[in-house]
Length: 252
Image (cartoon, rainbow, N blue to C red):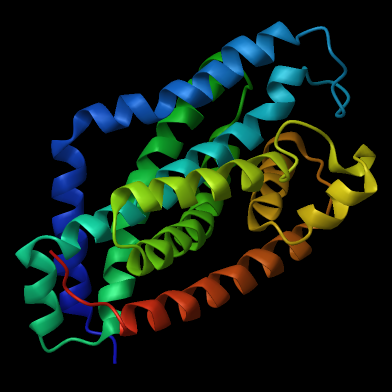
């Protein structure tokens, strides 16, 4: 059974931790901004798959998905840190279910991703791609299930890992393929057949496509297909995460 009060307490703790580490907010945005203002501008003369938009504008939805991906999945590190502290021991001893613990941690991880997404949205709307208030609101709303899905993946990995070094290796091995096969930097419709096939199994693909549909009015898949795929991955990653947390143990 899900305990709402416990979820609120976990979310409040994660929010306090996030806002204490203000340097995280700036550092996470550096790589996406380099992609946008260096690569995007450097290839300004390149062909944009969407008529009426520059290449920099075309990749902006993909870079937004990149922020969500890297911010959310990195959150799995915190569960490893909690394993080494008495906090996890106290939570595991509390009369709450592992599903409650998982959902509370997942919502806490989402918070950072949503804040980073909002900041990038405002920068993009001001300097890269003019967006109206409705598009900004829709893009932010789309970020919620996407960040939840990716946070689930990070927490699941973190629950199984014993060291931060091991988590870092797995994260590097996983995040870059998820990003590059998603079509964030190119049009999937003209990609090589093997890329198209792999991209269908990449949850970030549907996130990029949904963002692109909201901002540019054009995507590789219908909106309903993007939403259905994201919903499926949300449910699947929740099931995997709850199962992983079911065997979670305190470690020093």
